[in-house]
Length: 47
Length: 188
Image 1 (cartoon, rainbow over the protein chains, first blue to last red):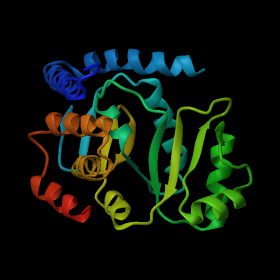
Image 2 (image 1 turned 45 degrees about the vertical axis):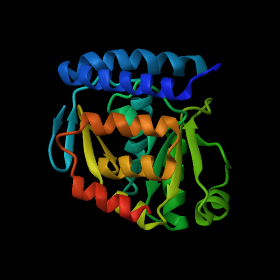
Image 3 (image 1 turned 180 degrees about the horizontal axis):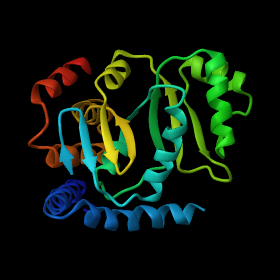
Image 4 (image 1 turned 60 degrees about the vertical axis):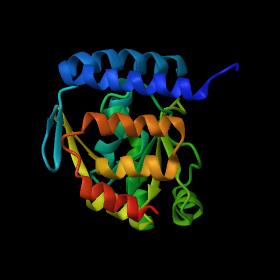
């Protein structure tokens, strides 16, 4: 099998669960600072 | 993050997508009510992805009111991607249940996908909307239970299932399960 969709989805769900836990145990400013790096860098590439 | 029945207070670093939404809705709220639905709601609450469009629902308005809103949008350095003439935008798009997109001048993305409210699901999203306070800014979003139900029952793409899981896990202790069931039935 070249690409295991189910395994990939499971891994992505696992990261979501981790990230939510991270958000709950850190200040809004901390998780959103990291989120802003991702979002701002993507939007910067569209300019 | 502080969560109450009708308001969530976020102490977040405002990213460029948030800024875009805040700037546009600050114009909009002078003219009409609105509710933000779909992907941006999950992103607002921390999903580590971005989007090219933000889905926005607005109550039906007449052409005269739309022209006033449109003029205000233009004078605040946004443009309509679909057409320039407000009568064309209103008659050929919005009145025919076709969304139009507004972006900042000199850009095409991100854009606000602006649609007039039509369905019972749209109406419920607005009527039962909740406020999200970020500093001095307030955004109106669809109930989280509706977001989850819609993404799981109607959209269903991997990205939507991930958005739904994110919201479900994050708001696990505050979601109204009766409401969620009600919305799921509404969407059948």
